[in-house]
Amino acid sequence: MTSTFQVDLHGVVDLLARHLYSSPRVYLRELLQNGVDAITARRGLAGEDAPATIRLRPLPDGGLEVADSGVGLTLAEAGELLATIGRSSKRDVELGTGREEFLGQFGIGLLSAFMVADEIELTSRSARSLPDGEAPAPVRWRGFADGSYELTEVAADDPTVPAEPGSIVRLRPRRDMEHWLAPATVTALAQDFGSLLPVDLQVEVRLDLDDGTPGPRGPSAVDGDARTVWRRLSGRELPWKERHATPAERDAALTRYAEQTLGFTPLARIDLDIPVAGLSGVAYVLPAAVSPTTPSSHRVYLKRMLLGTKVDDLLPPWAFFVRCVLDASALRPTASREGLYEDEVLLATREALGAQVRAWALATLAEDSPAGRAFLRVHHLAVRALALQDDDMLDLAARVLPFETTEGTGTLTDLQAALPEGARLLWTPSVEEFRRVAPVAAAQGLGLVNGGYVYDADLLERISNRFPRWRLSPVTSSDVSQALLEVDPLRELEIAGTVQAIDAALAPQDCEVIVRAYEPSVLPAMLLHDRDGDHEREARATVEAADDLWGQVLAELSGPARSRQLVLNDTNDTVRSLLATTDPQVREAGAQSLYVTALLLSGRPLRSSEATLMNGSLAVLLDRALRPGTTPLEENR
Image (cartoon, rainbow, N blue to C red):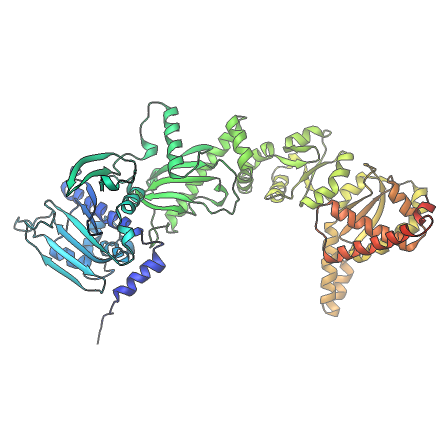
């Protein structure tokens, strides 16, 4: 036996309200969409001169009336579209002009009104003719929140039926949902969703309830004791397609549009046009920097009906510095009609939009102009993000992007010009390492770039691989230590035992100790990070965790390298005093103190073990300093 599912309308409406739509406000969008689709169908039947009007009229009892001049429905069509929830039909496709997807169905669009209404009444007069040439009888469909409905033909002269072809939907509000049908709310929603519709959309407003919403007004009417007017909300050209006398007037008009719709004055504007997707619009450059992780909020219209004001995934991730307002006809909406369906068309559109934004950025940055400098100052992070993916932007970024260097903030070109011809440019992968090395590198004439900020390390590495002419490479401990002066051989022999003892004291910190002479002399020690040492340490950890045979093989490949190198400055008085002391406790505590100081100078927070080391070394030094008589350091000066 075959049976059909029993549908609980309360459950369906709850599903729509809680899990599909973001807010009950979309009920009006769906009613407007039904009206637009019906008008489109009538134009296909009678030509482009067919009337195209939608009228919104708040009712005295708190309800709402939505009237359109569309193709209307016959009794058979109304039964086919409205009697079965979610049913597709050839007639539905005709009404929707291709809206085959779930929420494209006329019946589902009307059903969404149950989120705010307990009763929906639809009266309709069809624009079609019967085979005998007679006009079909008007119909009335009345649906209730309990899932029941009534569908009947009515007399042609019934005053509740449209006098001309079209449909009228009347809603009776649900309890606690009256505010969604209030005149001010209806006007605001209609303005938001339908301001760009290519139909004559008007709302009736009582003058004593006028909320001041701007817009053209039609002829006034008298409704009882309250004088009313019809306020037109749509029917104009898309803002970016309107004609203006001069480019300056167009710029001013589109700037005002951004201020009204997006809430900011843009830094610049990029025209968008993708005819294949039926897409046009404007990308506005944000006036202030935003984080790359900030969600994009684009205002998107589909066939001039607002899809959403916070549509994301429209542009490539690197284009986070723009906000778009656009209209498209070939993109598919999601089931809720509040986002875009991820398909091949959207992927191609995203790539094409990214190409147009990229072309604008390249052209703007290629010339030294106030606009280019302002864009780079505010959105250098976006340029960095794009350069990681685009070779043309990468080459341009190397010439225009600012970096923190030993010569101050400037471009790689500036740094290269400040160094001797043919000198290599070095970069650090972290801010801490740059702070450790920069004072000494600057004194030794080394060109050092800070790659520790967002995107910079990956960007510098990509520049070094893609463009060898920049002679860029990551800094190593040998790069810095080799640039420092080795101490005199006699001096090295004199302090060899002390250096060995200090090295042993810092071995638990995975730190090697060497002595060099370098400027500035006020800097007692410098901490270098050795990546080769990191690899050796990882190998040793693997050896400890491996079985005997494999561990023996790894042990032969790994050496005793340490991941850090403390370079003591032999031109510094404190270091010379430390190297001269004969007190082993003071020597060990002094070495530990210099090590922790070098860590702090790098801007790196101390771990608990390092804080304990600092406290212990200070305790020893203070103990010696506070004893009667001279300290061991003073005795050996």
